[in-house]
Image (cartoon, one colour):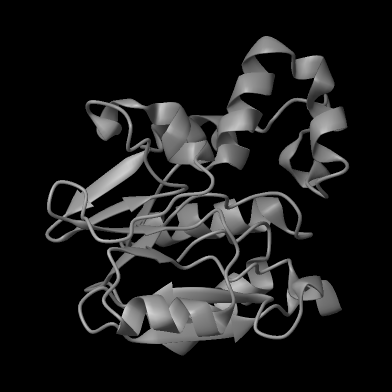
Length: 217
């Protein structure tokens, strides 16, 4: 799952559709926050799932990266960052990022290495001698294209670049070396085939999709 972007109702509804159990592993490929109206609810729900014993692994996306950077270097600018991104609920009454969110975001890695897959938010710098050393690219790389090769023998699953549902299905069903599962949950304005949250079963290749319900309420 990737790019939830503050859409807590859609996130919960997709988890119900998937029927997540404590025997499953849920990987979230970054950008939990911003744009949708319920950023704090998304993060709180992820932390609640962890507390309840679910195996949830989240990555750092560019939106978490920016928030951590501004919170450290210019906390007075946080309202300027978050208000246009519809995420003022991330702040406490003193205008600082709530401590539980800072603590959690600081623990988020940039990449997961699994059998047969790399999971990353944006992609890799394929020009680097070791693409796994370029952390900036992992949260910002755009475009990211793998045509015929794998990365260290692994396929790459990423988000960060909204793709139509038809394109996502073709990437999965065609066995392409890179699969983007960002359907633009908050980007329904992009037209038919966009505007949903997507979950991919890495074992079976099954796709689940839930259209955004946060922006309708």
